[in-house]
Image (cartoon, rainbow, N blue to C red; front, side, top):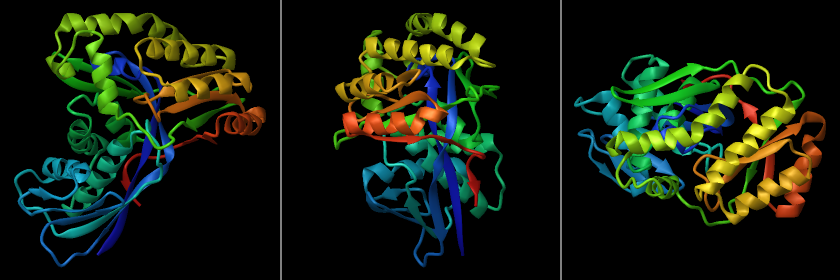
Length: 333
């Protein structure tokens, strides 16, 4: 037995951090994809192999191995419930090695797609999302909004909004498209030190007096966060169907200013943003969790993208690449 499951990653164009507390956000599914190879194994349970080490999820669901791989036992439990887990080996192959692109959600979604195949089921995107979210919640200390898992499970631009009463993860395909003359550049500011997304989510929450998970926060606290972001989202909504490059770039920069004001940026991110703007980008902002080692999105004219990428790389030593939008979500390849 041998097959491959894969899932795209994601880039949040608007709304990171605020989305955790119920603000709407726009996310894009991006490639290259993360890949998981499933194969036969003579042992019991699921053997996990990755660059982080090896682990085993027993048929009962108990996990033994590096803590970073423990999230996959939660995904397995979401797929199989209390039923014994099948025996197989899985090997993880990362398409991205940078922060801020939803890697944990992507791997969880690909893993879920493979497990559903082993269970004899072709899962719908929402079923894959539910299983992937179970793992991503653990990866982010209970603070994952759901936007990462939704985006990588569906594989298309999504407007996402979380609600708390009743609890729900609401999303709809977006009519968003880049201006025809433009492309998005992704800048990797990582130089060995990374602030985890969980840490950045905690920092953001504490500024509003929140110490628990978003679900445990008072509604007045969540309303304050949503209120800070709401004026920007009104502008974004009006522009989704056909913003000019200048308008879209200005909105990106405005969103970045909000996040920077809440301490979500870093010297590296600020260097990448200012370098992209100086090189001719229409706008730039952090994407994902932010902090040390975070990623940056920049909006560039297609005719200038190589020149802008080269200038950013030479002035910052950061890697800069053109994004490729995904054509499908988590799937068996």
